[in-house]
Image (cartoon, rainbow, N blue to C red; front, side):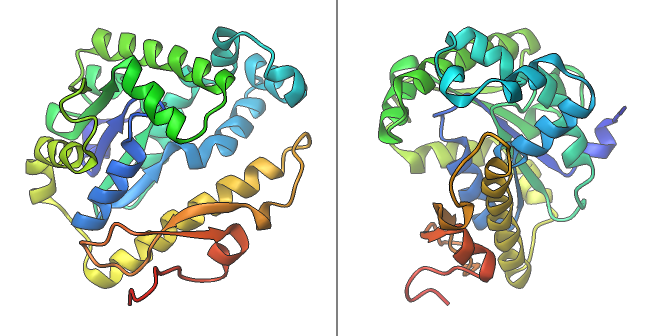
Length: 274
């Protein structure tokens, strides 16, 4: 599908490797400014199904390899099976189909630097968070990422760094000055997007609640999509995730730990949040 810059004027792009904090930053900005969040991770299984329909060999091999064997593959091989390159155009297709109001902040490791190189996004609407190796390792340790996942994410970080450099895309290096202070990182990203944020459009308070509900339901679909794979096990409805508080207050940064079933059943709000 061919797109133009006009198709994507409603999109702010936030890329970077796993462990760079982009999901948290995107959600903070979405709450503060009334934006729609598009998280590429929540489309993982839809994208894999699309690749399977297109006859992608890497997608087919991933599905055919039992999880116990998959984790034994070298990280470079696992990265090749992650569909990193293939999913970039799918992300662009997805956000093009989203409503043009309010602004969308599209975040994910597969956000393609090509959107900047090809002029689909200008410098004020695209940014990649690029952590040092030590920062990424620290963030992943906080998530209790296993050694195999950490090695895979390191490969992804190097690949994304090459793509960003080749595209000449805007980047924010998390090199020790901001990486210990999430608020400072959010502020730096906010300054980068300031002109686009001021131009809007942005959501009103009531619409913000609906957008947060939408973002939480995207996570619900992500978990259910994983558990629908023939090789997956467990009950998706009992999986616990940290969901965004849906109070709609622009200053709220709270999350709510809830099961998928609880999140699907209705709005989630932190204690004493209306």
